[in-house]
Length: 193
Image (cartoon, rainbow, N blue to C red):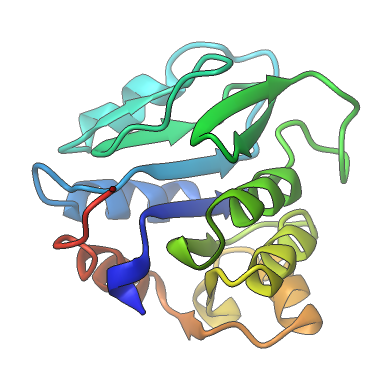
């Protein structure tokens, strides 16, 4: 399974920031896969979030521009107030279409498009959050062959998002934040080819 994974897509909302920091802090220098973070964030705050994540990261965290190629060894963060889509050509697309689940970026949309583009080569992880965004998208990615992980609701600061995913389907794994970090680090020998 894990040798097939070429991209990690992580969705989170309320309560996920500390898990994201923990993941970035634990990644080894030269981690070979791209990681895509789709996180709910304030629309009005355009600066400071990426910078705060880069403080704790051994790989570069950046917001992609429309049509940017997805490159190995980077962590990508959905820009504030844009939907972040993954296209089959292994590039990003940004959209200002209507909110989905009251959110832009929509975690559902990122999981759905990444699952379609990468299929069994994607690992999708849903973290803490206070609404249902991400559950349907992760299920869609699962149906397209993605390896799926849901943060254990008992370990999440806000249980709603993981619980909504667990209501829809049985993911490959339900893990604590520390176990999620270990899983991601277990992919350190994979190649993005």
